Amino acid sequence: MKTFAPFALIAALLVLTGCPYSSEISLTPGRTANAQFLSGGWDSSGDDYSEAEHYDISVGKDQQLSIVKSGSEDGSVVNYKGYLSDIEGTLFLNVHEEVEPGVEPMYYFYKIDKTSDTEFVLFEVTENIRERFGKPEEMVKFFRENMHLSFFYTAGEVTYYKKS
Image (cartoon, rainbow, N blue to C red):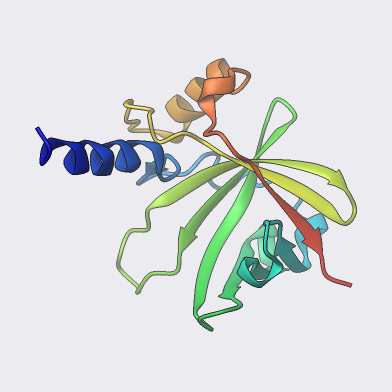
């Protein structure tokens, strides 16, 4: 029984520390919401500022986002592409890590609440969604029907503050 306890703890941690919902398709491709308010440098909230992640976001043609994420301690840099989708007034960030040409990206989804010109909050769409969608319209319908439910998002939103 003593060997079971460490394995049970590890299994519980894996269940509790998830990733956002991912899909091979994105929401509303070709119909992007205005993302100009995201342009600039942003720092994430955290208990320890040294652990904060830093993001530089530029808005390009057709409101496409280029996002550069850098960690303050290890110096790592990750490049993302994305855009915003507006579903009945609720904004969702569709984001994927930059991939080589010819490689299909994996999209991740976050609800974004703009709280002021210098602050926004991201809510991760839960990975517990089991449905898979063949068309963006099917996924939009599912989001529309469920986006108002608290369990549609993981616990613990992240607040971002614009760098001066």
